[in-house]
Length: 402
Image (cartoon, rainbow, N blue to C red; front, side, top):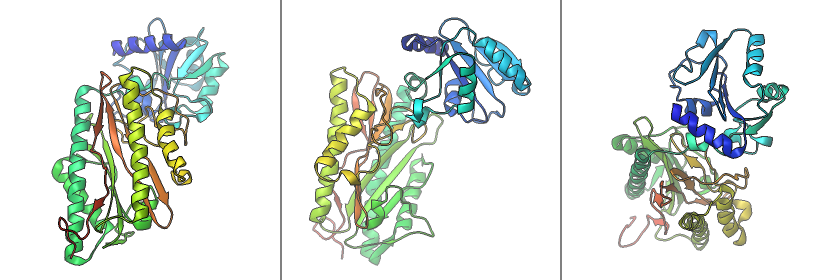
């Protein structure tokens, strides 16, 4: 705990902040809980504050009912009971601090780190302090993973790559035997293979046929499912991790056709998306090999430029990728200059998805997704496999559909 405080103080000095005020109420700020390593099983219903000054000893300000919530952390402990005593003690603790870092994002530019409510920000400002964002250093504590966690990410990616191959084989078998198969049934088959492989997920995978694949967040269910027939276009998106604590998600998307070959248009769109994915990944590799910073918005711009120049810019309707950690969508650097302008650098010992897409309403959508793991030394590893050609389940000497 002491080392984390020392590390935080170093980052505070680098950004010119007088301290970091970690605050939570009813687990609204899960990033504070991550840094403070508060167990998910811990009953936390009252406000608490943990003040880490750039220099000096921290201070814990906790409610009398839950006075032990920060006992694992160094620093003087102060109690409050009434709102009046909370405000008075907080003002005293922060006396002299002019720039205070919190989980706040100016203009809500990066929602992933905007966890402190406006009223609390107003309270801190009323003490004569400026509230600045912790976004530039917070990922060092919430998104940087250990080497063993990185290995769990790689193993999860290998498992998903194998399972998606099994899914294509299963769909082919069903089409051969029955002529059609429901999206939902294919999804459930994938979940059965997850269980056999020791992979857990926070929500079921996507199996989307034809126009459904043009909806990035379409998900089949027992009540909402369409049949896959011979000749159809299919998208499979799956994500999961090993079942032990601290395991890191992997996330992949593949596309294919239940035919001997894709249509000319399907192949054209696939090739554009694949180039966008590859160029964006190569940009990350290049920057790290040159030991130069690479920012999330730059990765998004790289992929988006390829799709825009091909005339499909209006059909790429989401960011290029997201940070991945113990949560599928982590709080670290996003590959995004569309939904947000993420100016944060990609850090070593982090991982993220690269998943450009083109979605043609009423027709089909191509999304290709693999993960990128940046090792501590800056080496780039692609996780979950790569798709260079569309999967073809149809007639041919290798994979006939009768």
